[in-house]
Structure formats: C-alpha cells, structure tokens
Image (cartoon, rainbow, N blue to C red; front, top):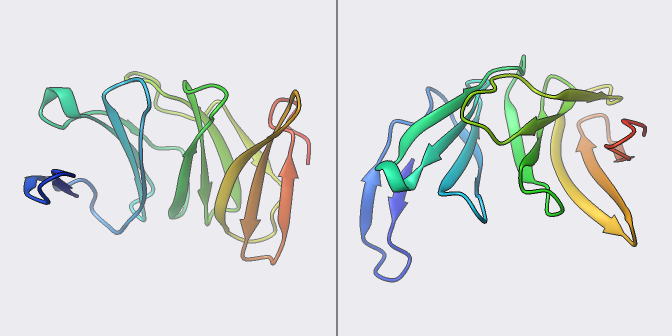
Length: 143
C-alpha cells in the first residue's frame, strides 16, 4: 500500500500491507484508521497516527474480500463483500477478529456493496456474480 500526501503528491510511506491484491480501502471519518481488504482473505486496520501501524486483522472470509464500506449511520460498523458468497457486518475494533454476522443469499461471489437510507430505514445493497442485486435490511438480516 502506498501512502501519498494529497497536497504535494509526495510519497509518504510504502507498506507491505497484504500478501495478495488489495481490492478496497476506506478512511474512517472519526478515528485515525484506514481499512483495507484483499485477495489474501483479510481486512486490516491501520493507524496513521502511529506511523501506519497495523492494529487489527479480521479473518472470517473464505475467499477474496472484494469491497468494504463504512456504515454512514454508525461509523463503528462496516460491511464487506466476498467471493465466498457472503456479506459480513463487522465492528471497527482493535481487538475483535471475527464478523458480527453474515448475510447469506447470493448463489455466487459478492463483488460490491453499499449502504442506502430512506427515511428512518437503513439498507445494504449487494451485487454478485449470480447477476443478482439484493436489498438487505441488515438490522433484521432479511433480504
């Protein structure tokens, strides 16, 4: 993973972050964290205030982790999409290593996810290799 200064385009840091392709990264809005996911089946948390120290590795997927997205209504949780046919919900943490729960329903790998909100209801969208787009009520775990 290469870290650049946004204003000067100068490379600040180079990190051997994962053992395989990095698929997605996100910056946490309130904590000094960047999260990354990879084909090495992991999601990692990096603390930029501690010289980009790795502070957690989540290991609960059984295939490539394609995307991670932060819940805009609760920045302590995020979701991941994987080719293991699951969407998983996690807590942003420096100690927890496994997902809170999985959303099961795709017949093939899940490539992309995003949160959406209508009124007081919150949903998670997922798209997969099964040509399906699913709308999840992630609080009740129903599709």
